[in-house]
Image (cartoon, rainbow over all chains, first blue to last red):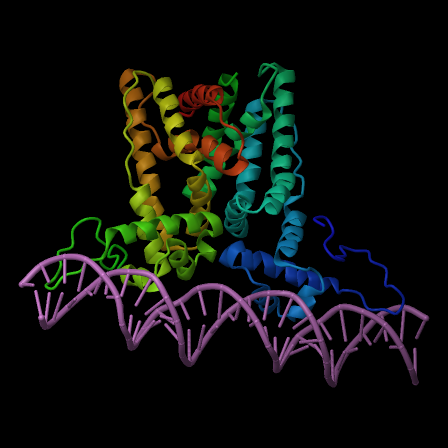
Length: 207
Length: 207
DNA sequence: ATCGGACGGTACGCTACCGTATCGACGTCC
DNA sequence: GGACGTCGATACGGTAGCGTACCGTCCGAT
């Protein structure tokens, strides 16, 4: 029920017999509209009608793809948030951190993302479905990255073994998220550098 | 316009001539209802009618106090978030941090706060009025606390002078906020202790 | 050439809120 | 006792969105 989004076709879906498939261009227009609408009014106020209006599409076209606002939003955001980001080995914990922070900062500073992410995170506190989806898409990803990063540092001898990956993630992502999505302060290169140094020290100290 | 919330009486308001004042018990019932409603549906979906229903009060009573949902919410939340929290000097940076984290954790873990705060922060990204209010009430407060805390540490010689208070606030509040309000992980005493140690190290390293 | 299905558009009845107005009941001050 | 203002309650017309059911059109597969 939660994974089955009616009959979305990212590509496939064989035409049953006659013809006519859901047109991908229209699906894409709707996806874009969902994101724009999410950014401008948030999940709570998002309405199917407004999405259809913005996509310049009939309500019918939307309901043909998803049964509800929740289904629609889940499919759209998980498609985006599920992308894994590679994290090359820079040779040092400090370097890995700085790179990670830089990549994360770029992503978080995207105007649409910086509106949608806090909104969905807040909504996740009320809606288990959303929480689950974000958990799978975002946190899972971040935890993996954190684990890899720490694993390397342990191998290099920069950190002792036996680490709590969740606590590490808090230390790594927390300050940046606060800075960008909450306090909404400026994020300079120099700031990211200091942040990386601070985080490296924090990780080393939190055994 | 933004500071004048119609004619709210926290206490005063002299009866003009005849008599009959807005009854404080009712104002209080509405305030409670606003918070409960904010927690359960968020600012976006919050409706005056639902607030009145929950407070077991006529819509009239609400409109008599505030002209709009925005005014109402701003007055209610700033009344709560504006409370300054004292921060006794424990004698060491590490101790001050641990105490601060403990107090903040208690506040953030309150079930109503943990629903409302992320919601309003997300909404603040769209609504300048809300952003301004939260800025004044929350961040101002936190920055002050951070400044005091760092000032003491500098006096003690635990930290070098010339600190960016905003960056310090990111390091102090960020991880905890992420842990509680976003990742929603458990927060044990032991966790807070490790966090305080990590943050102290981070502060020392981020010159 | 025919058929099937997705398309935009429109209309439907229904519900929820909006913000305002008006009502009688009650308390409080003059 | 009279005046006044708040109280809950109810009703008002207006707007918005819901989810469904139809149109007639277009297009690709048979």
